[in-house]
Amino acid sequence: MLAQLIYASEASAPMGVGDIEGILKTARRKNRLLDLTGTLLFDRQFFLQVIEGDPQQLSDLYARLVADNRHKRLKIIQFDEISERRFGDWSMGFAAASTSHQQVYLQHGATRLFDPYHLSASAALGILRALGNPGALDTADKLAA
Ligand SMILES: Cc1cc2nc3c(=O)[nH]c(=O)nc-3n(C[C@H](O)[C@H](O)[C@H](O)COP(=O)(O)O)c2cc1C
Image (cartoon, rainbow, N blue to C red; front, side, top):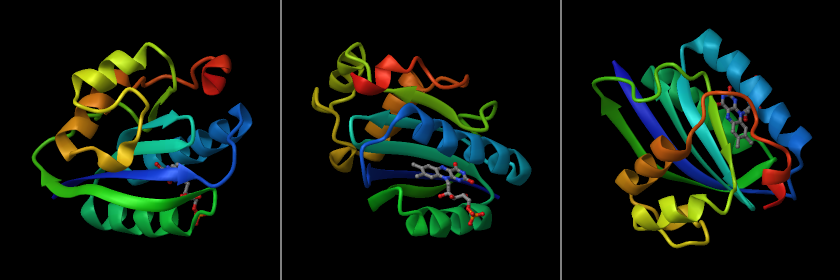
């Protein structure tokens, strides 16, 4: 069985490129081992992440995420069974804040200033699909945008 978890959270402290790289490095290594896929969006202080895979693995990862003090106020936007992966090729894609994203947020019914806590599951998924990048960390200056 396959499931998909979408959650929002808030960084506990200002995040630098090195912090984000550290998160992605661990995430990509562990997700490959556990056959989890997805993408992570970081914009100013907020994270929005989708993760897909075995439901038990997802639940176990969620427990680790809640215990991770680099972020707080975790809110599950959706945890649902899915028939196929939408991010199957990505151990963990990534997108950082960029002013060009504002248009995408607006298209998906979100506000220009990204606040993932008020997104519907379909809006969150639309934004993650549109912005997620399977490659490495975007350029450093984007983090400061
Ligand atoms: C925003 C954010 C996203 C994360 N995403 C993942 C992820 O996709 N997969 C993962 O294994 N760990 C992820 N982590 C790291 C986990 O919280 C945890 O540190 C990691 O799984 C190692 O856990 P362990 O030391 O208990 O083995 C993320 C952490 C943060 C702050």
